[in-house]
Every structure is written in structure tokens, then in C-alpha cells.
Image (cartoon, rainbow, N blue to C red; front, side, top):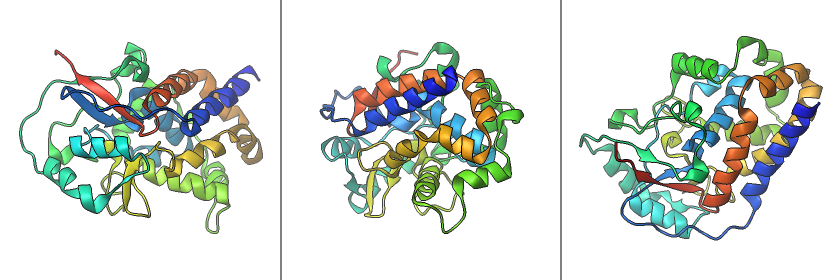
Length: 279
């Protein structure tokens, strides 16, 4: 019971971050390398754990690499967290995709968007080749990451349990929210999306604007409200024991707490200003 209560509190904290009012970040110096917060290690791991728990094939569509947000897009999103018109910024993404310059080194997330070293190294690395932009993990890498994070087959939802959570058309409003959010988090190559943005932690909304997945009005904001009901959903769909096992055997509560701090410090644009490492 204590694990389930902690999960409810942790998810509530994460949701509060998304709806809180925090001053916009300032544009940093030229040494800043901006990334969408969903690519920050604790946030990425929270999403991966829940997606793999629900459906490993879906989790395998999460991005394998992280890609910096182009500088001018970053500046636009800091000033306009609700999104910047894609038709105005598309050329900056295209220019990046056409850049064949060899790149090396790494960047360091601010302390409030990091996790412990044991897990930090498992997060998506920076892409080295344009072909890696929006490349999905794939089943093998997803399986390896799941094992490293403590997920085993016994805690994965059955097809019937997954169907109970997600539903089929016509879905309930809550199921539609989860369905839309899952698509946004897995908008990598080969997932049928018109413009994949998974490696950026961004989303292209129905209004044609590019914005962070955790910006104030992004689709996954509402999904946090649904996830606060996860204990009740588990009871209804018959996987309470699996949820309890997930909480006990994975670091999900740690990642939720760290993700709360990361989102708090990067709201409202929800972009993390990393810095180049010396390595």
C-alpha cells in the first residue's frame, strides 16, 4: 500500500509541475546546447518505463538519440512556449538534417535535470549522423534498456489489460488523451507521423505549431491528469499486482521526483539548457 500511495503522490507532483506558473528561462550564452526536456534522463526514463510496462512495441518507438533544438527555434520557444509556427521554423530543422559535419563530445544537463550516474549513462546519446535523427530504439535496444531498469516480463500488461487501458474507437475522453500522448512520445521514423520530432522532445500540434511535449498546452499535459488515476485504472483492468511490482522493482519513483525538479526549473517552455562537456 505504501508503494501505491507514493506513486500517487509522485505523479501528482509531476502534474503540478506542468500546470504551475514559472517564469520563462532566459536565453543563455552561445555555449548552451538546448534539448527538449522529454530527452532529459529522468523524464525519458519515466516515459520509457510506463510505455514498456504498457506495451513493449510502443516503447521501442521512443527515440534512440537526442538532437539539439536549433538555436533560433530555441529562442522562439522561450518567448512563445505555446509553440512557434512550423512553416516559419521548418528550414532550421532541415538545415540541421542536411549538416554532414562530424560532431563529437557530449553535453551536460543542469543538475536539476540529471539522475544518478548509474542511470545517467543509459539515456539517449547525442546523434552523430543525420540518419540518427528521430531513429527509434527498436525492439532489441528497448529490451536491453528495460532489463537494465528492472522491468521483467512478468510485470508487462497482457493484451487484454493494455486494451482495457487504451480502449478502441470510440474511446473515452481519458483513453483518447493517453492514445494521443503515446503517439507524441513515440513520433519517431516509421511511426506514421507526417513530421517526426521524437529526438527533439517536441510535438507538432493540430494548429501547425512546434512546441515541447511538456509545454503548457501540449497534449501530454492532460495525460498527467489521467496518470494520477493509475491506481484506479489498475484496479479496474486487473493489473494492481503488476503495478505494485513495477513500483518496487524499478527506479520509477526516483525518476518521477527528479523529473518534477527538472520540469519545475525549465517551465514553461520545457527546454533544458545543457552545456558542452570537456570530454
